[in-house]
Length: 312
Image (tube, rainbow, N blue to C red; front, side, top):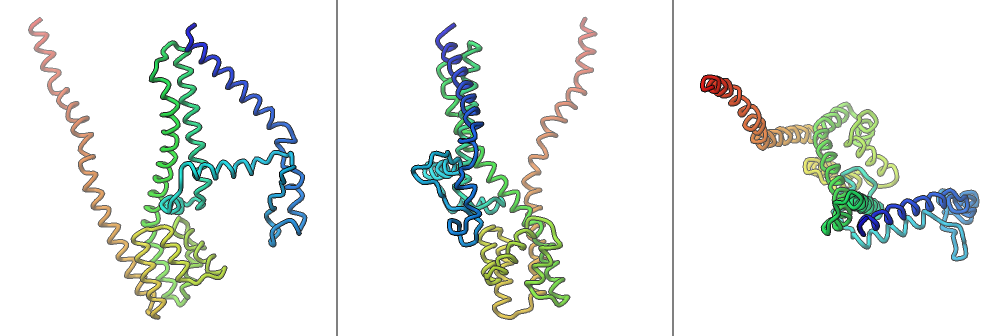
C-alpha cells in the first residue's frame, strides 16, 4: 500500500467516523430539540412581537441549548460576506419566483459548493484506492466546489429565464381578459382580482400579489410599478406604463389594454420568427451529420462489397 492509499483510507474512515458522531449528537434531545424558551415563547405575549407570531431570540449568552437556527443565520450572513450580493441577484430571485432573500440563496449556493467539494474529495479517495492517484487529482475538490457554486447560479438564471418567458407568453391572454372584464363594466381592481382568481399561471400569481398589495394599503399604480420593476419583462413593463398613464389621465382602459394585447402578440410573433431563424442552422445539423452520411453509406457500401467479391 502506498502513502496515497493510506491517506485515502484515513480520510474515508475519519469522514465516516465524523458523520456517525454528528448523527449521534443530533439524536440527543438536549441538542436536537428546540430550547425551552423557544417552545414557550409563542404563548407569552410580553416576550413576543406585537402580532404574537414570531418569538424573539431569547437565547442569552448563558444558555446551553444549541440553536440550529442561529447557526444557520450565522452561516447565511457569512455566505453573503463571502459571495456578496447585488441588485441583479435580487432581480433574478424575483424573476424565478423565489423569496427575495439573498442571504438564503448565498447559503444554498455555499451548500452546493460544499457538496461539490465533498464529491471531489470522494473522487480523490476513490482514485487513490484504485491506484490511479496523481498530483493533479488533488485539484478535484476545488473544481467540484467551484462547479457546485456555478451550477447553483446557473440553475437560478435558467429558472428566471424560463419563468419570464412564460410570463411573456401569458401576457396577451391576460390583457385581453382584463379588457373584457373592463368592457363588461368592472373596475380595474375588480378585473385584476377576477383574473387572479380565475386564471392559473405565473402572471396571474403576480396579479394576485398586486391585489394583495393594494388591499394592504398600497396604491394600484405603485403596486403595478413594483411588479414591473420586480419582473423586468419588456412587454409587461410597457403594458404597465400604459395602464398607469391611463389611470392618471382618466383614459378608457379597455381600448388601451386591447391595443397592448395586440402589440404583445405581434412581439411574440416577431420573437418566434427570430427564434426560428436562429434555429434553422441547428435544424440542419442532424441532416448534415446524421442522415446524409447514412445515405452515402447505404449508396456506396453495396458497390464496394460487390467490387470486393469480384476482386476476390
